[in-house]
Length: 246
Image 1 (cartoon, rainbow, N blue to C red):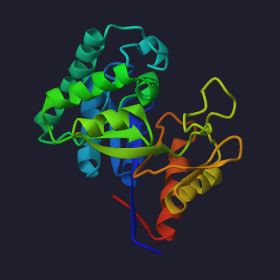
Image 2: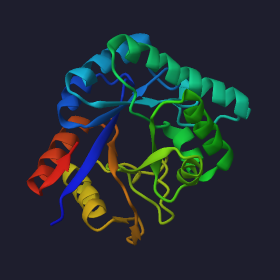
Image 3: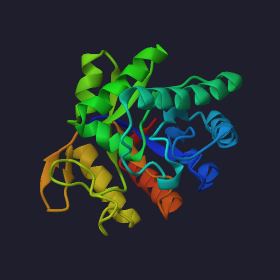
Image 4: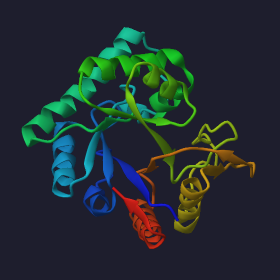
């Protein structure tokens, strides 16, 4: 088997408080920076943990909507959304500078992530923020998405992301969280889901179809009800298969 290296990322700083248990097993984290969750104190706490475990740090901006955890689309003028996203990321960068750590990537959260995958306006707002920051950042994006295309057109480095604990529709959108089968709960099923995407470069959708999907980084949600067990099992099984995580 060819030498395979993947990244495993987790959304952090969202109030669950399991970061210290997850950090030893992951290679990158996305830190909530005040839009849907998080504040200076939580950001500082997670940054220090990530630094301690040599985990790459990303910003996890969202619609400014803590009431709905950033999981509902907000109708906002582009300039207002741009300012909000940029300010969220800059708040995290301030803390990173204090800790002498670099920002590695940006990964939008929730409804903003899903909207930018299909909507050019939202994708452009995010890409313009990345350009304005003028840092050597990567953007975590879904395969075959609008934001991936916009980023590449603007010379932004991307990493294709797939979700370890979420089910997919045939068009490679995520099954809505309003559906009972949106989240994969079983640790064994999560491993099989990820392993198929790594080895076969295909994802089995809820209709049973096998659809081509490329991914270099795989997300397990930090607020998954069994996140610690899912990640420890996933990492152990992947390493046993000769897959490196870094």
